[in-house]
Image (tube, rainbow, N blue to C red; front, top):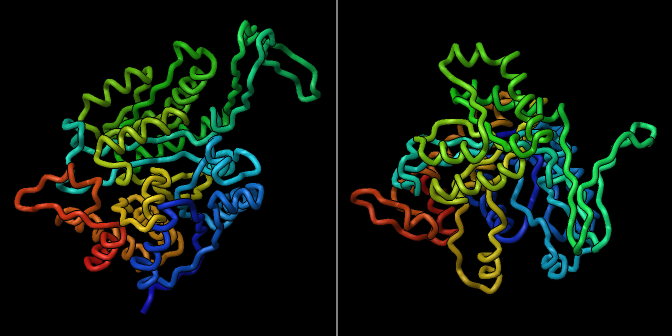
Length: 400
């Protein structure tokens, strides 16, 4: 008897090797046990180009409607991809579009398995990374500039009348220019989401930016976080023995590297993009990190923290066997199923998601894993066995 769902998940399909794994995960691990109901959106690059990226917007709006989404990794095209896929234009990051519409915060946490030793040996506890998911370069306006041209920041009032302007640069050589923005309301929501998450999970909060250099932009993040913490969270944190610390991001990085972990590391959008990959890799693999976008009004989008594994995809397409780590993609599905079960009051669905997570971790702990984890695995009495992409999923299915 399959577990029945009430409300569908929003399913966002993706690209390349993760798209292949996506289908196998459903076929091998989920659909034999769950009567899976999804509202399907194909966010593969070909379909985004075909729909002029409307499918990405539609998937985000569906997430606002249904409350829970699960997303496969997708390509954000560069110039080479535009040529490879014969695209109409260089489409923006689908993740950036979805995050802008949902105005959420991305929380990323390492998936811990006994025997997988972090590269940073002092890290004994998980480091959870919170990434602002609005603005910065992901919503930027940028252009090439010719020698002799000038670039300005120009501020106009609501009627279009110029209020003030600042010269960015008078170019004595060809160059480039970029304009980024953020919103007080989004930064405040970001702060609230981080402090709420920290309280729920008993984590102190470390936040770093570069306010000494960016005396308006980054300083605004610092001010809003301090205001929100002082007004609404300081006493709650003290009651639980937790604290909030703001310092420069380079200082945070140094502190994190010599810490034992166990904190919520808060990052601006670009910083979080980079540092989450560093943290994931240091804990073992990019394939071993969960990622969830949480909106201020309680909408959730689960995904893997890594990309589309292009190199493996080309090998797969040529008929070669690959050993691609699917753990983070499995946990994207389990996170979404668990949240759907919580919201709809379906305990069997929550329990199934927990069992699938345990089966995945136990498979690795018993020595069966993909190739990326082999050099990291050290457990007395166990010699690790390398499995290919599908064999690993079938081994998890046995354990499940």
